[in-house]
Length: 411
Image (cartoon, rainbow, N blue to C red; front, top):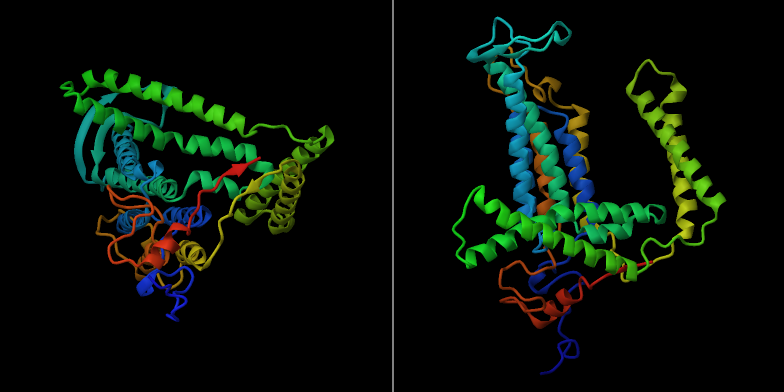
């Protein structure tokens, strides 16, 4: 067949597939983390259940639209179950340790009261449970659940191994430990699914507590085997190498980092406390940030590593990070709406309002599912990497196959 480029046909733009569609590629992991942390910051500003449910809806939409078929991308539903458990525990604790009941509360039921000693004054175990106290606990638990789901969305969307490459050289060893720890939960989920599938194929009839032993033992054995393989692979690639840093260089790096962290803590305290001296606010924060940067630069000299085809920060990354940051700024600015709408009062008991500006801000955060490009991994259960999808041209497949090569960090 004649070559299309030689025949004078128009070529598709880089990063675009045939028909004007964006070619699939994996987004920069730091963009997903910025988006998720900014959305978590926005969720921490409110206890309005309608806004918190909208945050969960935004997370569910973006994760469903842009997750891959990797092992770490299959655990978002477990984060949802964990969030539901957090809400339930928060409500149960509030009901058991009944405090702050006012005469105007609507009583639901009463638990048996357990007398407490004098030194335990102020906290009651059991007693009347009101509707206002239960709703307050549920709203606080829902806010914490949204924060957990934001972190779960970041772990689902961002590749933890690729995120290791963007860390400074001084934090490389710490980044390896964090990457391994973040990948433990998805690997355990994958092991549980694999063992459960094997039991189902063997017609295992035991359920509930009886099936726990037949699932836990293979999962622990698989986790130990994965740990040994990971340790052997990291040792063969030179992880943990001390490098050429002298003792004085290590001490100087530690001193700079310690002084920088103290400056950051003092600066944050000065900015949050209005009665603190002026020198304890922004100047201390800038000085601490400078010392930390100097420590990272000095410590990074002893780490030498190469990266094959590093991830690029393109317009899609700016769009995704900007969507999350814009949502956080709009909820922190309290411009165009009343600040009490973010934390509605339960006295008197009424339906919470839905302010327009926070809703628009959270919907703007959900636009990350549209701004980001499609995933570069096959999405179907029977898809094969490199296989041409229906309706795609050969040039589009060529672009997709080279959009995200396999990368590896060496040291």
